[in-house]
Structures are given as structure tokens and as C-alpha cells.
Amino acid sequence: MHMMSVHGFALSAAGKGSPMDLNVQAATSGGPIGVSDGGPRENNWGYKIKEVWQSSMGYTPEEMSDQIMPYVQEWLDKHPYIREVIVPFAGTLAGILLAWLAVPKILKQFHEYSSLGSTTLLAGSSVWGAVPYKKSFWGALEDPVRYLITFMAISQLFTLVAPTAIASQLLGQVWRGAFIVSFVWFLHRWKTNVISRAMAVKSLQEPYRDKLLTLDKFFSVGLFVIGLLALAEACGVPVQSILTVGGIGGLATAFAVRDILGNVLSGLSVQISQPFSVGDIIKAGSVEGQVVKMGLTNTSLLSAEKFPVFVPNSLFSSQVIVNKSRAQYRATTLMIPLQIDDFGKIPQISNAIKDMLKSHTKVFLDKEAPYCCLSRVERSFSELTLGCNLQYMSKNELLYAEQDILLQSVRIIKEHGVELGNIM
Image 1 (cartoon, rainbow, N blue to C red):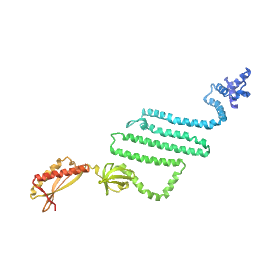
Image 2: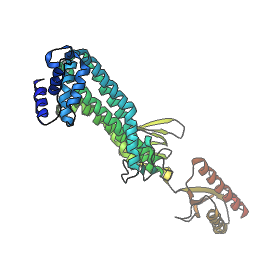
Image 3: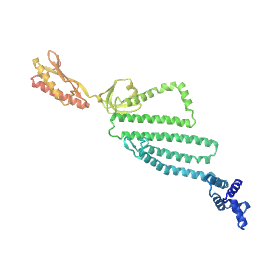
Image 4: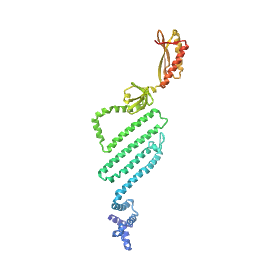
């Protein structure tokens, strides 16, 4: 109050009105006694506000704040309940309203502005076309920011229940942990949005889709591990010391989990290099079947007998993998026994069968030409061997194609007056 009087005196010397001028005028005119007289207006807040308003005309905002804050501080000191309860609750309510009403609108405005610029990672347009708000950078940021602000606003109320130094310290750790969780959540949502937009492109080939799914799993695991370590560090757990001690004395644990880690690393290697994919028929060592599912630790196959087979991924790093589904063609060899006395008909029969194979719709002619020749001669029979490359097809189609080739070959043999032989 003394500083207020000095400040008012200085302003009166400069030609401005002040509370002292008002008091003097009131005393000379027979009006009410001023604040300094200790009269009834000493506790009249309406008069004090009017007095401050009149004295602040022409002040800068900083000077106005200096004029008003003493009265506000005096009022809060007389009403501690407002300072300790009403103000924190009002701040919490304001934070919640800001999180759920203002943040989405602000982020949508940023999304619209960024879509007009050239920043493709943050913008509403990218190499995959226009990006809706929910699938954009700003859409991924919405929920983590809203829940973070809401959590921080509500957790502030805990200081009312336990207003101690320990509570304040714990509150700081909780806030750091909440920030880390929200940041990892945002990165996961943004990663998911980017990969889902890439997967939605129809022109994207199947091998690239599998690699994107593998990267999605890899980044998800990486974010989980990094977030867990950062959260433990924020909560006061000495992660670096634990890792150092674990690196020195954790050999037994490493041996215990080496099979699991080997399967995981082999699974990541298989899914990135893609020697096979879901639906392919493969053979690795003694294991053969159709790939049904590729996981991080094992791969599920379906055997020829339709039995499910679960293969550890580490097997594929030590075995030669034969992918039958990716072959453009496959070789087949067929033998037909003959009962023949006139071997002069063999060249005619061979040429006719070769012409039939060249015109067959299932025979692959780009690499090797079909052949048919006499491969065995016995006293009671002779054997004709024919071979060709068949186009890639399913097992059933392959069997029917070989059957058709045999039937047409037998028909050609009979047309030349030769009977089939009997193998003793």
C-alpha cells in the first residue's frame, strides 16, 4: 500500500489523477472519508476496483498488473479455500476442456495448412494421394495429446490430497512417464497410418506387401522395447546399470533364451529376404508342405497329408530351401514298356511322340525340347523313355497332365501296330 501511495504521488506530479487526489477532493467537499481515514469504504471492494481503474488510466499492462495484483493477493489471502480448492479445480476443468474441445480443432487446422504446403510427411497429401485427417500425422497426434493433457490436469489434483514434497516428486515422475507413453503411442499410430496407406495401394506387388508387414512387426517390437526402457528410466529405475550388470553376469540367461532369439532373428531374416511366402509349397531338409502362416518364432506348414506342421524358424537358416511354387516349370520323365520285334518302327514312334509333346498345351518349350527314345532292351520287352518340361501347376493338374501325355503316347504306339510290354 505504501508503494501504491508513492506511485500515485508521482503520477499526480505529472498531471494525472491518483487515489490521493480523490481522497483530498472528497475531504474538502464534505464527501465520504477516503481509504486512508479508516472509514467504512476500507472494506468496500467496489470502491477499491473503481479507485484502481481510475488510477490506472494511461498505464502500461505491466503497471496495471502491479496495481491490481496486491488487491487480488489480499483477496486470496482472506479466502484460502478459493486458492487451495476452487482454483485447482478450475484449472483441471480448463485443461480437460482444452484437451477435448480445442486440441482437435487446432490439429485439424494444422492439417489443412500443411496440406497446402510441400511437407509430405506432415501434410494432408503424399505420394499415395490425399490423406484424410484421421490417417495423417496430425490425426495420429490427437488422441495421445488429448489423453496426456487430461491425465496431467487430473493428476494435479493429487497435490491437494497429499501436498508434500514426496507427492510433488512422484508427480513429476508420473508426468514424465505419461509423456513417454503418449509419445510412443503417437509413433505407433503414425507408423500404422503410413503402412496402412501403403498397403492400400493396389499397384503394390505382393512381395513388397509382405516386407511392409514384416517392417510393421519389427517397428512395433522396437517401439515397445524402447518405450519400456524409457519408462523405467523415467520412473527412477537405473536401466543402464542393470544392462551393464546383465551383460556381465547374464550368460546363463543368454544361453537359456538363445533358441528363442535365434528363432526370432531367423524369422526376421526370412520375412525380409522372402525365400518363400504364404501359400508357397516348400521343402527344407525333411520338411515339406504348403506355407500357411509365417511368425516371428515359427512357421506353420500344411503337409501333403493335410497335417499341420510347425517348424522353428532357425531351421531355415541351416537348411537348403526348395520353393516349388516359384518354379516356372518342372521336369517329368515317363517310361513305357513295349513288346516289339520290329525295332525299325522305334524312330517313327519316337518322332510322333515328340511332335505330340511339342504341341501339348501343358509342355514348357522355352528351355529344353522334349525327347523320346529307346532306353532299354530286354529279351521279353523294350522300354521307351520320354521326357519334357511341364509348366508350373498344382499337384492335381500335374498328375492329369502326365496322364494325358501317357494316354496320347499309348495311342500313338498302338497306331503303329505295337503292343505294350510286360515287365517281369
